Image (cartoon, rainbow, N blue to C red; front, top):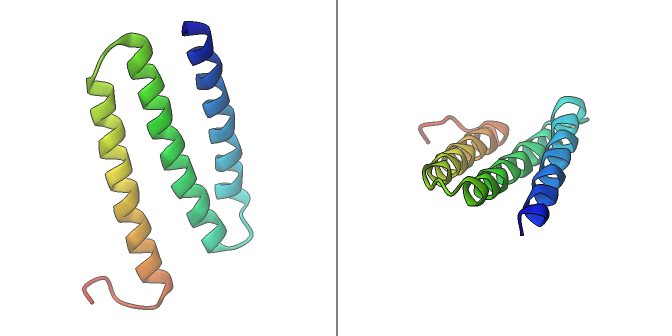
Amino acid sequence: MTDLLTILLFLQIALSVACLYRIIRGPTIPDRMVGIDIFGILVVGICAIISIQTEKSFILDIGIAWIILSFIGTLTLAKYLSGKKLNE
């Protein structure tokens, strides 16, 4: 089981690097926004795998906080791109 989790962890990290490439080199802002969303999901997956491997549950709390902040950031960026003010 541990070998499978290690393989999954390295796969998630490799996919995170691919998302960072999309965030940095994305041709348009929506492409970068999608890359940021996927990167947030991958980070939560990495937190879950590390939490299972180390048997420490507080790492899941870090993942939950990360995904909440990612969601708020996505909403803020979507509102900005639509041309509306943040208080509308």
